[in-house]
Image 1 (cartoon, rainbow, N blue to C red):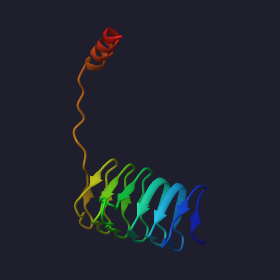
Image 2: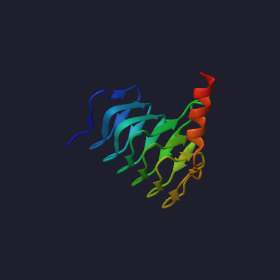
Image 3: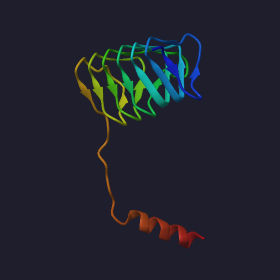
Length: 140
């Protein structure tokens, strides 16, 4: 089997899909290598990235490769799982066999075999929205 690119996949310059690699629906790849058997299935941007073999990138994930002046690279090792809605802020490396939890913003290197999580604690303020809507009604 060869590599595949889904509908509305945008493969920009210097992009390489290795054997059995997949760029799915609404995926944009730029100046990146997607390793053998690796998948970027949907709704993701991967730019300036070297991706190893058998990587799975969850939907809505991006590499943040531009700081307004310079482009930086992201390196993802072999057998890595990137959870959905993850931001990888380059320059950053994710080691072999690592797992990145969904909705993480990765700003530091992740060692091989590690679990990386970056989330703030969910806060619930009971009744806050009700009061907000009432205040807006009074302004009308």
